[in-house]
Length: 497
Ligand code: UD1
Ligand code: CA
Image 1 (tube, rainbow, N blue to C red):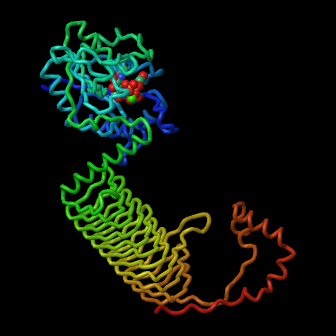
Image 2 (image 1 turned 180 degrees about the vertical axis):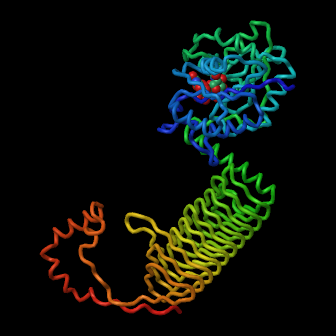
Image 3 (image 1 turned 45 degrees about the horizontal axis):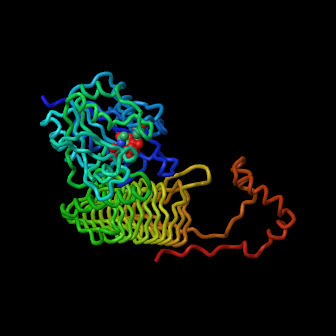
């Protein structure tokens, strides 16, 4: 059996330099919180237990951890007395530890599971009390420096504020990620003191104590030191986000996705793309967006949690929680809101907004329309400038349009509306209620004004209150405006062209 592994993720710090009301580890890169990236990486090691240490804004961080990783133990560090204290709190929450304990920080989203595997393999093979994941960096300022003994082993980690000139010149630094022999860790934690420049209980002091006990400490140098960089401020957060994005793009390009302009393309860690997808400049694929083969997205398109079918085309559009069928066309300048489902070969054209709308196979809403709370059957064509008026000011209602219907331009469907299979409507038609299958609906007639409607039918709403105020203000003026010649007959609805 493999050595038992416990992982402790430290996430209690304040992250003051973020200058944010959001806890540092909940800030996102590549569509996931920083702690989410770290939890994902450590879970890939298949540890028997994961503990997250929370402190600063603990309710928010604990709730987020519980959502991402319900099996993780959450340990509360009431006061942030240092990394050594945080690990002690975690070990106390576990009760007992055996095998190997890996300590990681929640703010290093670039960490790769391969590096952790190398660290654990090196640690187990050498039988060290502790093994540090170290990195060699150009600017070691602020980090704990790795002091190596004559035997090549690590004799101490010296923090920035506690080192002399010579120590500060060392460029091998402590990433903070350390593998411990569990028995050694449980024994050493109560022996840590806060006798240092920051008056904190340093986890790094375990190294000196191990040496004093006659035990050995090793360090495994990470190949790419960018992996162990933490985000302390928003500038570093952006730099880390760019690096993560570079990695994600590189992976998809190697898997057969054409990315015309990597510099302006952003793909979240959880997005999925098939081979022969083409992404034009200025595309963002966010959340759990999936794009099937031969689809072409962009330029300048944002898709969040969307599913795009094979060979579909989405041009200069914004979509959230929408599904676009194979071979369908969207855009330019379309806005697909949650619950939009466009069938195979269908079309949502320029300046069309959709919400909670299912548009059938081959059905088209080509121009300048709003389609909300609707179902449109296959092969149907919706005329330009059609509004699905789904909201009466209080409730939302549905519109159902059948198969192969042809509706005229500038229509308004005042929901609830049903338009039957193969029906037509004339230009400028306002539909209320039902149009039977195969019928032509044309609305024309004088404009009707029903005075006092808002007060009578929507009492107690802000709409009624506004009407009442307006009525009081202009009661003297009302008598003259009733005879206004502009409030006359509207032109009859033209038939569909
Ligand atoms: C720590 C290391 C340093 C290393 C550096 C790498 C120590 C004493 N120093 O320094 O050797 O080079 O990380 O980034 O370990 N935390 C808690 N509770 C606490 C204190 C910290 O959960 O009481 C968490 C923080 O949220 C953070 C991590 O531990 O994620 C590191 O703490 P921080 O105070 O930033 O340590 P550094 O001074 O950067
Ligand atoms: Ca730090």
